[in-house]
Length: 482
Image 1: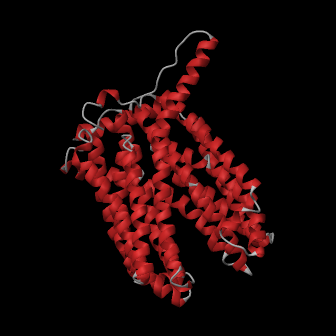
Image 2: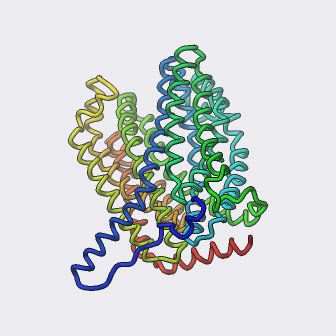
Image 3: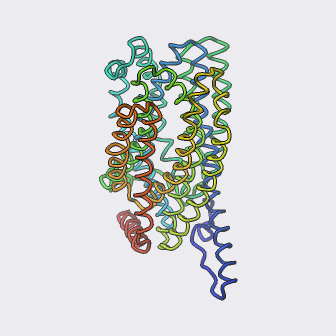
């Protein structure tokens, strides 16, 4: 936020003008337009940055694939299993800032954003150090979970080469939330887009031109992610956030235990979500004649991976908007922001649902020309469509939970819905009912549906004024300590 902008922060709810039915209808439309504008200021750049970061991994994986099947498998396993675990955990833990920074910004306690971010750096860096054994012992761990020896050996080496990438998460995710909560989203999108271009160019240069092998693919991915970190860090301390960044502070070391508890709850909550559909691929790999099923499922998951960047952007936007309004003491504004975000995301989800259903026998041609795999994808397309539709609601409700500080509660909901209902149901339908991958995926969609229904119930029954009071007390307490 630039100097002097404190009084024109456009994140507090607008009131509806009184009067007759026609005036109230016009007032509602105006409120929807204003809220949509606020929401898309966060969601638009978030979509671009998430797609760019996701594409960097895809590009590096594609260049690794040109080195050979073993290199592709090793890079994919290292990036998906080892780095993917730390990515999910640290990303989840950083979402605590969406609660704290968002509420502090709404309460106009701007200096607390910088303090919260520094606390997050301390906590996430410490957790990154604790996760190092997973990288050092990646090879035996991968062998233990059934990976072939040659893939496990090479993936273990690749995991060590990706250690800089691992530590970049501890700094990038807090910086991203710090900037996002004060609507400085453009710099995040610009940094990610520029890094994607650099990633493509360096990958071609080092992997394709200089033939430096798998090490080069990992090196370029490290460089690309750290460029994003450095751009955001320079922007933060370089004078573009004068009210929210007041320098390094010893206050970052106070209140760390409460911060750790909220971060841990957020990490568990999002890790359980992040790993849920990875279990689907793991279970499918244990089916008889699994090769075609895994190939078809991987195509569907790639499509889902691209599309889910949109709901994840709404997750971020909703979390910020709800936290801003609660921090400002405006419970009704938080409720209205939730309604607008959910409705907007559902409309987008319906569009992609129709697109997948209409192109159910066509979109697999992007990845393969095998008639057997194309036919398998065609049979899975309806499940992909409904997964996308559910994803247009579930992340947004999770964003409401993050904005309100319900991470611990939602972690329990996720355990029950995903791993006590969804996975067992998928196993039953896949093996006992002999429906194969269709049954596994259908069962796991059932788990997502249960989780979405519970979150919807919690959101509908929420006492927004009480949540606003709790947010004001939390921010006031932290500010008083300072």
